[in-house]
Each structure stands twice: as C-alpha cells, then as structure tokens.
Image 1 (tube, rainbow, N blue to C red):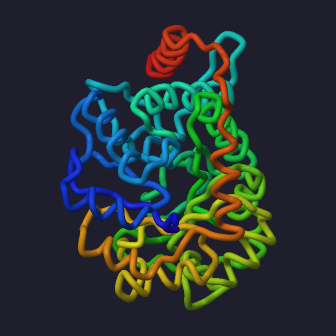
Image 2 (spheres, rainbow, N blue to C red; image 1 turned 180 degrees about the vertical axis):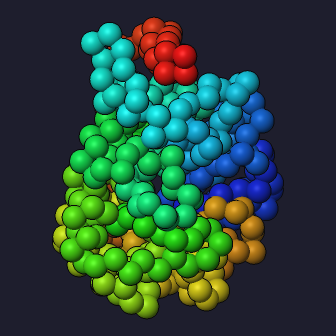
Length: 338
C-alpha cells in the first residue's frame, strides 16, 4: 500500500518515531525544508534513510528550490539562483531568456540530484496582477501569460533533463491573490473571462507537464465558497477540463491557514475534491497522524498519474558541462547587474 500523501519531517535526521511512522504509513513521498538541511553529506544520508523507510528507491523527495527568496539549499554550500522574474532580463551571446531559464533548471537539477532529491516544487506559473499580495511577486517569470508559459516550460524542461521532476504551481493561479495563503484565505473576484484569458491560460500552456500544485485561493466566478484545493468544481471544470491538466495534482500544504477545519477534514475534502495526493509540510507527528488517518491508498487514476510522472524522468542524462553552465549563468547575471 502507498498512502496518497507527502510528508515533511522535524529535523535533519529521522527520529525513531518518524522512522516507525513512515514505515507503517508508506507515504508516496517526502518534502524537505531548511530545517532538514545541514550539509550535502547529511542531506544525502537523510534522503537515503527516507527511501529506506518505505522500501522504494524511486520514492519522490521534494524541495522548494525556485531561486531568489524561495530556496531551501542556500550559500555557501549551494549556489544562489535568480528569481523567476530575473530570467526574462538575461541575454548572452546567441542565448535568449528562455535559454537561461532552461539553464537555471538544469543547474538546479544537478544540485538536487546529487543529494538524492528528485522533485522540485518549481516553476511558478502564476501571473501576478498589479496590486496583488507580493507572496508571488518576483517569483513569477512575467506579467504576461505567454511569456510565463515560455520561461516556465524552459525551466521545467531543464529540470527534467537533469533528472528532476518539476511541479508547476499554483494551479489554476495565485497571481491575483490579495492575501498570503500561508496566513489567510485569498478571495479573487475577477471575472471568468479575465481568469481564462490570463491566469488559467498560463497553466493551459503547461498542461502536459507531469505534476502541479493547487492554489488555496477562492475564485468566486467558479466556486464562491471553496478554495481551489477543496473545490470539486474548480478541479473538475477548470483544472481537468478547461486547462486540460491530466498530470498528478497535489494539494498545497494542508497546514496553511487558508484552509478551514482540522487536519483530518482538510485531507478528506482535498482528496474528495479531486487532488491525487495531499501535502503536509511542518513535520508535526500529531498532525501527520491525523492526515494519514484520513488519507487512503494511491489507486486508480491517481496511481496512474503518479507512475506517469515518475516515468517522465530520462533513464540516462545527456552530457552536460556543469562548470561551463554555471559560468554562463553567472556571467549573464553579472552583466545584468553592471
């Protein structure tokens, strides 16, 4: 049995309690945060231990490594990467912004794969609206949906080329949110026509990618009472049909304050709405136990999508000169700053 859940953990090493819980619960995957990171050797040991608990060598291990302010692996032990918005300004000899977005993804993938991390919660495909909360802000590639599609796809392709699965987020769009969904529930009153023309359009252009993360955002034009994560209307009518996304759909973090109810009901309503997998990040054993009690086995369409996502990764990586790639990106960033 594989549980339709992704869990975090409390610190840089598994406790005996966590080891026993993960071995019994058998979550589909795990997610790492800054609290889980000390050194490359320690992260490698942790990813190995996590996979040992579930007995699956390909168990997904996720991290948020976008670049800019959302980067769990940080200097001096790992390179700093630019914000999403920075890529649209980068140019080099014979190289476009799209080339640099691909390069950023490929370099991030090299960092992650070397640690045993095989999924990156990136790229951000949200299109920020003027006056919206800056929780997205410069994490986005652009304010134009077509430009977001181009650069987000390039980064996703770079990640896959390096052996790491991308997760597009936050479907069907967080760019208009007037609040940070970590702290409260954003309510977007834009018309359906405006949403379809911008927010949904960006994800529609990326609908063939293997994984996506939901937005804890209410779209009153579609479902005036429930955020996308727990709305069967949004997931069926918008995510699956209008956008056409048939990849693995995971919730954003269930412990965020945008969602109401206890952890058990949050897991139940997210899965009932159409999420394939639920995400719980903070590593609280008490909370994870509640989520696990409300989460069933990964079966049917969800299992198919999960298997298809993992099958996206290439069996063998094409040759790539990491040193030259890093120098190329560094030079472009230096030129931009000059």
